[in-house]
Length: 266
Image (cartoon, rainbow, N blue to C red):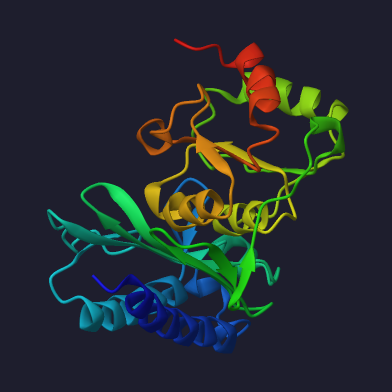
């Protein structure tokens, strides 16, 4: 597979979908917003963006399947799959908060081999592929060199409906606020991961995410020199829907905080 060429073509598809998101921003009304579940919102913009991305990517690799957020009728294939979040940050988008993104990854036999995160408002396109560095608009990026958590800026998110772990999660949040330079909650996990990759954040952590939220961003972090695990420090973070993405240098210290509240085996 010519992954650089595939990535280049996929970026064009993603950028066109990003132009659509920007053009529709502010045009829809409250009546266009639907609830898929408690606090889980969707609009015609999400669905149309996904449709355009699927059509564009199908032309690049016709045999690939799809793992997508909105259209569950699209089938996952055995060998190659595109993983798509057509609008990560829907709630921000609906409320005219200009922090949202598109996330597209390519998976081969269960491993992520290409990732794109595009933030349309800032026109920032983060991307990478297997064996390559990570890039922002064509320029190589790397994670920060910060080694201590008390000198780090963190990012997190909160679940929309799964509150089973919230007491421990909030206790961890309280401790981390006291032990870092602060915690940000942007509302788009894909952007959070991209910002770890380029050194804006040292750490991003969250639970309850889906594969389309994190697939592209996780690979971008890894190829920028970072580390991605679950709350136990294991690499198969997606299976437990937990993620810690760091610059690598703060990972062990951060895990020590997490394990105080989320002990291995629990």
